[in-house]
Length: 342
Image (tube, rainbow, N blue to C red):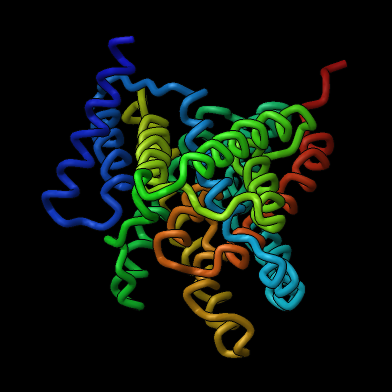
């Protein structure tokens, strides 16, 4: 319990410092940075997994609440960019597997699941089944998410001049109590229903689907309040930062260094896809960057929400990316799992 309290105090200190320095996204990047520094300094860090997942459901409701019939019908028109998602995943694997295997000496299973831009838990599960190094996978994917999440706000602000200081919603006191109750039910019920049927990303996609249905039927008329979005940012940032707890010098020199190099590759690939899509005028450049950046689904939802981007466009591409990665992962796990010695 003391570790949990200490971790949250460290995260809160990060929020304060980011506010005082007027840095972007203090509620997300503040906890992430503070917990990362504390973990690298050797301090034990621990969050509350159930609470962290509950916070992710807030983002699902926030995305689902933006759905309208016009918005859903318009998604049929984004197929020209959706078809590029599997192409990008293939290219990431084509470059990433040799990068990790030949340059850094990881075994094939660890290399494959390190390269695949899927969800952290899914990649750890499949990677472990295939005989991969779970600790290395955890650090590599945490670093991928961290770098993308830290880099994008500065790109959005520096290149497009996006104001990331705007509140992500109205205050809770400005919303009807009935709407707050509906949001809470959508978040909790959507999460548990999705979990019961085995839907990947249940804590986000379940609430998103249920909130979307409620929004399109006119039952849900508001997005979650600013305080809820800030809380979600806080716990997501804390979760990413604490992934580095207990990291050793050898792991930093190998696993984290390998991940940082791979992040450069991912950013270059993302820039290429964004430029191609922009040249052919297939989609707005800011939405394209947020849609193709291989960060975490929750983190990208936060950035899209605060930047005022087209939420349906961004989330549709990330959901498809995760689907493509997850559908391919079990096949790879069976093909490349260690064979019993006869």
